[in-house]
Amino acid sequence: MADVTVCVVGLGYIGLPTAALLASRGYQVHGVDIRPDVVATVNRGEVHIVEPDLDAYVRAGAASGKLRAFETPQEADAYMICVPTPFKQGEGDPQPDLDYVLAAGRAIAPLLKPGNILILESTSPVGTTEQIAAVIAEAGVDTSRIHIAYCPERVLPGRIMVELTENARIVGGLTPEAAKIAGDFYRGFVAGDVLETDARTAEMCKLVENSFRDVNIAFANELSLLCAKLSIDVWQLIGLANRHPRVNVLQPGVGVGGHCIAVDPWFIVAGNPEQSKLIRTARLVNTGKTDWVIEQISARAEAEKARLGRPARVACLGLAFKPNIDDLRESPAIEVAHALIAKGVDLVAVEPNVTRCDGIALADFDTALEQADIVTVLVNHREFNTPAVTERLKALGAMDFCGAL
Image (cartoon, rainbow, N blue to C red; front, side):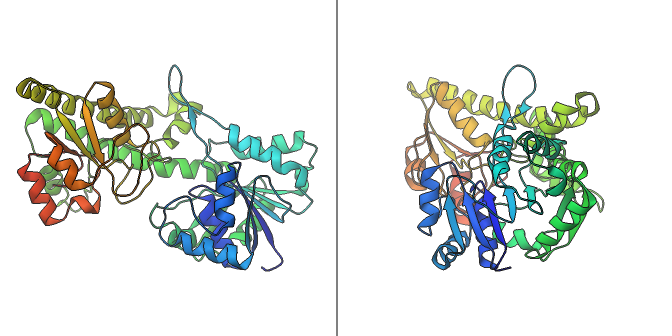
């Protein structure tokens, strides 16, 4: 491994942990990011994202010289693309934005040599790996001599450094040979099974995994809306239903966030709208749940304003897209907070995992509760569900949208 060099393009929530893990396993790793501050931070042996144990990996990689960060791709034996794949908002359903992925392919193309491995890890619509091959070919590279594959990440924030090695990986090659060679590369640092297939199947597999979750969460969120209408405690209902040996209803929440479950289903819908009606409906249910939460809090705030003769102060507990992490990407709680502020609500938020959030005033837990007329629980962080805190929130009549109480 010591003589294998890997270039990881994109040092975000997946790229940086992957680069740091590879460096710990003896690979020479060139991390690449277009943000100069990120490059400087990594080269100091520091991190710009919060993830358990990541700081130790990066610090060790930088100290050993096995991990170096650059603003442009560097020559390597294997290239991994781990850049964002957001979607474009406009009229109609969201559409995938592959600009970062294709730009990474174009930047790597001049460095490619026969026998190199090129792996796309970014979650992408079906056919994206073929588009990468096309842009490389346009740059004059003989793609028949490059091993091009797709291998999606399958990790949970908060457990990334563990799951990068323990989880099974799906490796889809543009050719069987590419799948085998890329698969062998992953077997060098992955303890879980490495399963080989074609690129389109691997791309679809990643989208299916997150769409499956989205559809099941949508069922729980729709139940919560029905129960609100019927004066039924949805949490008790789900607990009772789940006593059936073949039923496992998930927990409802404010919506669905993060860069995977809230995004990936649209990649399927965009390419196949007529064959993905259930997946599209689930997305609409989950985004609609966020709108419903905004309406509930707004109505309570208006009632309090009429009673108090001044704007009600609302405390929102939790802003991350899921419990116990600092990741705010696509967070429905953030959407709720911004919408309430836009409606003129006097709002303060408590988010124990971040120190700042643009456009939203943050406070510590005790200060927020002392000042608030209305308390809402949007994210079930561990800090909000200890017995003492739960009793305090119940006594305040907190609006619980995530089952914390």
